[in-house]
Image (cartoon, rainbow, N blue to C red; front, side):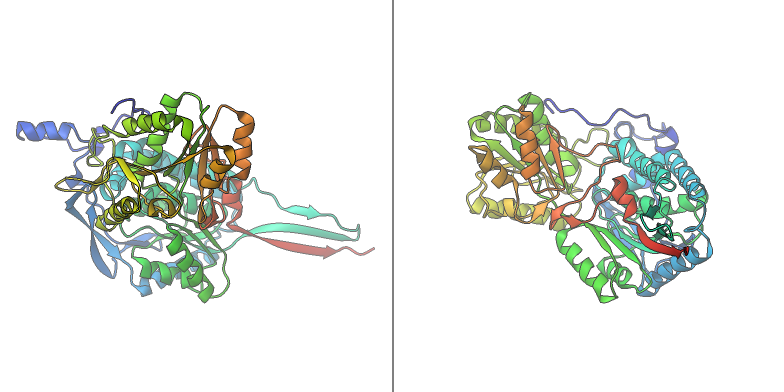
Length: 523
């Protein structure tokens, strides 16, 4: 692909984690295997659930089709409502009996450090489990996703003894203290697009704060997180403190509604987030944090520096993970005087990507997760064209025998009434709008429903900060796009993009409740 630069460093794959062909195999098969990071048919994850510190057979078995090759089907156990209850009660009893929430914070941190070390030691295995069931390319999962998991465990492990209580100002005859305590049982629901990372953003701080966790990964991508739960116990996390159940929305609803769940954290679509809030309210008042959809603008002013490099950034912002990213830069809001040239540069940067399996060394754009998702992408593009948008490149599916791919697409002439503007597409489709002045740029950047992330590109630092102040978004990148692997900045949205924050100090403190203790000393 012309001008493409991967954001990830080269890696060395552990040969034990790959399946290289024997000399007896045919030459063409030998060549095929040398183009693969691992043999997908050698990956056989253990089906089931993880409850009370051990693997448990699910009430039923469903098959998960690999999005890279639908002929590869893997058994996954699904939890019954009774097993959801078993997982929650296991977490409740372990939290009460194990002393996890009351142990010395540094001891809890040391266990999380060992957990992180085990994740790194099993990185090739975990990355293969991630790549087989999700759209995450194996090399990216190795270089980024698995390292984010171990880094998140270490980062929040450090928080365990760094957040102090408080002595408040009173008269000398009284002592008023504020202390922090874990909630108890945290229900965590993670999505399918970045299964490892977005699960770790939940369970790592919740565990570090002294809570027990019941995690439900997406039913489409259950395997890697199950392996993490096993490693947690190996590291010393008490049995029952970290549980993983599989299942669809029914299992998620039963988990959220459970009366013994004290806190709910969810990442996914805005529509599902609304149902999560409703379910949580049905079983009494319990706090809920939600990281939901996005419709991120890339606002490009005429004076933006190095527009060739910037075009690559904008292209990566919509094609990375095939656009299946909540913070994708899915809208290009560009100053009209440079629009023609810049759009051409972006379109050029989006061409030449090679679709392929997540385990192929040649793949630069992964598959769409399933038929439902690609049909939604296709429907939005077709409706947008019917409403006046113009396809500059792409606009349709890519013919492929064993997987689903959508062409990197640029739509120009998108209006605020167009579906490509209104709805989160979750695919490699860039909607282009043009502006004349600063106020129009801000008006277009501010979406009526979403406010997760935004980018502003300009050489004028004053203009950049004024734009950041006026754009209604939880994160604004200036002359940049995308989260780095540092973990200090909180992440969460405005409007229908969510409530609460993941990561940073806020992502730890939300798993703690505060208690005021008052002592009357007397005169």
